[in-house]
Image (tube, rainbow, N blue to C red):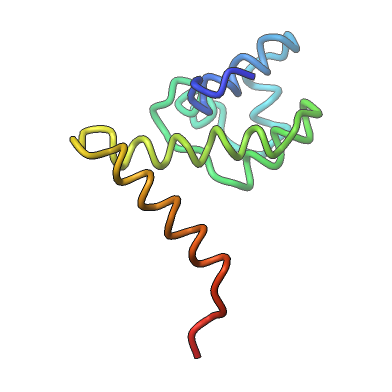
Length: 105
């Protein structure tokens, strides 16, 4: 999977590769067809529940879809910041630090 592809585009590719109509996938994951169309065009955000359903429908690795989803969220938040690289490195260090220290009481 190309990890640089946005989650909506990835969902569209999965659907098109399976030759599944938009309306059928929308029904399978229990959302409106227009909502799915907006998700596929990256005009509307997807949520974790939909990602879980997509992974089941297409029998794809949920982890890969989640990486795509979270990287989209992060990129959208900091894409116009000049110091995005430092922001990402600092966030990574905070996560690593938090995972190696006991919780504050």
